[in-house]
Amino acid sequence: MKRRHFLALGALAWPMAARAQNAPPPPAILRPHALLDGEVLRLSDLFDHAGPQAGRVIAASPQPGRRMVLETQNLINIARQNGVNWRPLTGTERIVIERPGRTVPRNEIEALLRDELTRHGIEPEMEIELPGLIPPMIPAQSWFQLALEGVTVEQPGARFQATLVVLADGAGTQRMRLAGRAVVTVPVVVATRRLALGEVIGPHDARLTRLRAERVRPGQAQQLAQVVGQELRRPMAADQGFALVDLGPPSIVQKNALVTLQLEANGLSLTAQGRALESAARGATVPVMNLASRNIVEGVAIAPGRVRVAMGAIPVAAR
Image (cartoon, rainbow, N blue to C red; front, side, top):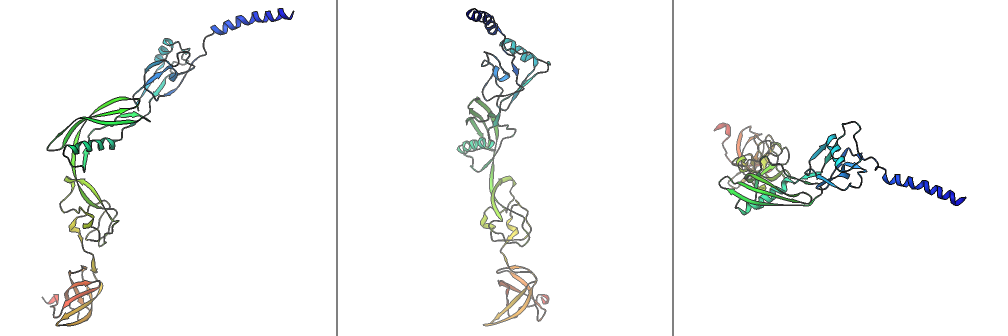
């Protein structure tokens, strides 16, 4: 009896196994978004449970940094052609397919051009104009290499043309036409902060930069040594260039300050108290009021707070 029972169970199991083998695959599930890191689009990028053809390539992926959208009818056609068990539920299904990318750094393009233009006789310290340049995109994590082809330079004007070649993993070779101009620059000393009238410029108050030669006025300071230790004759804004005419030696006599008048003649030396009417650097002439006589005389600033006056100097008011 037991053997007949087992045989009966086995007979029932065979049809069930046969039906399981012939059963349709489970329904595929459409992904709402596909993020690609390669050059091809596969069925498995669009559908979960795509079936035995899941690894099949159906299209090229978008260019790095680009996207594309497949609408309902596109998806229906792809599913039918590749045996994917999928049907739309609402008729508004779609999938957004993106390929992450990054731009080639502009400064690397300019550095490559600078090296090449230098070999054509243009000064290395140049500013490169590339109007309308949109750097090419490459895969987000890929290694890349840049090169230039067909570089030509026109003189005068330093206008150039070249073809940029971009080699990147996963993106093939890209070529882009470049056209622009190399602009000569010159060194200029600028303020690092706001500076007030009369300030003595310290080493941290100025820095050296480069500007287009066409934008630099004559008489601008072009070396830090021309600026540091000098006194300002007018206020300065941050990043403003120093004009040599606005700089001078530091004052050792301050306007309206009390000073010692030193009178010298024929080996005699006398002192008197005075008030400086102007500021003056070492060796400069300054008018001083003698507080005893109230006369105004001119002397030479010789030390901080000291003015030398020649004996018998004619008062300024009496001239």
